[in-house]
Length: 364
Image 1 (cartoon, rainbow, N blue to C red):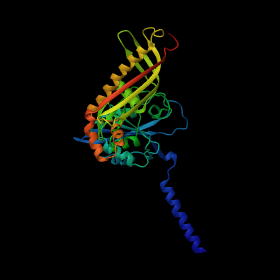
Image 2: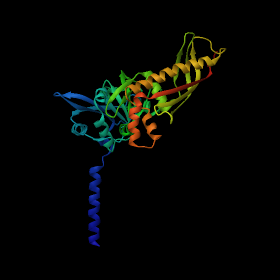
Image 3: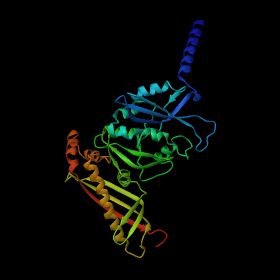
Image 4: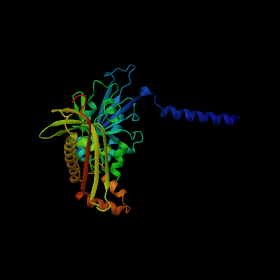
């Protein structure tokens, strides 16, 4: 009996000691809300500049009053920089609430393979974290705080999480999807471009990557068109200008489809259909035949979509995933992928656009 009690007492002592060294109370933790990575030259060599945005707990939460702290450190590797940061803070770094991962523009153009590899390997960083390119740098984005934020980084979380605003110019990239695109044949990764403008953010462009670095930045109009083709975004405005009239169609429905023809492997059929209401016009439209307006909008949108597709084709980038669609429709494995690489530079886009106007708003 005494022996059993002694063994039980030793077990309790060991268990208690383990818990006391591994568990930290909330007031002894720094919650890392965002991580920024930049490239910085030190002593003639490129190093990582790691910036962490830390939340400082407060007893009272008011809009714009939430405090945060930025800590930065340069090192040859990201883990080394984090170890050095730990020596400069008095609390444990907790990455369980990290939702924002910012890559500086210069680093994105140089190479992001190591950065993404670190994010995916670190088990306490969530795969649903939002990724973005910070312009001009990641540190500038982390240092920007909007006056409407209740919690640090809420503005970015709301923008990409569709919790707050929704915009056709905002494309969302999450860590798990970016990593998948980096390693998947026939589909290339992308990140939204976030620019700091005083106490607010401008998010209306997207950067396109090959498997290693950013190769192309689309302008706002191209970004919106890509968002529509990739995710059939429903609500956007389309401006049509002719010699007789100029009007803006606010779309309410959007559909698209891609299909490879078995008879012609070097051709993809793309059908686009969208409809909406005219929100602005420099002339009266109600009494006229709407079919000519629908045809004019279809013609203008066809030119814009084709211009974007040809730009992606010329850059040898495929964020839409046409290569994956092609190989999925064939059954020869690696041979199909090699054939697609040969086909894509001269692929023909057979695009047809149909438009439906529902009305001219509340006035004629």
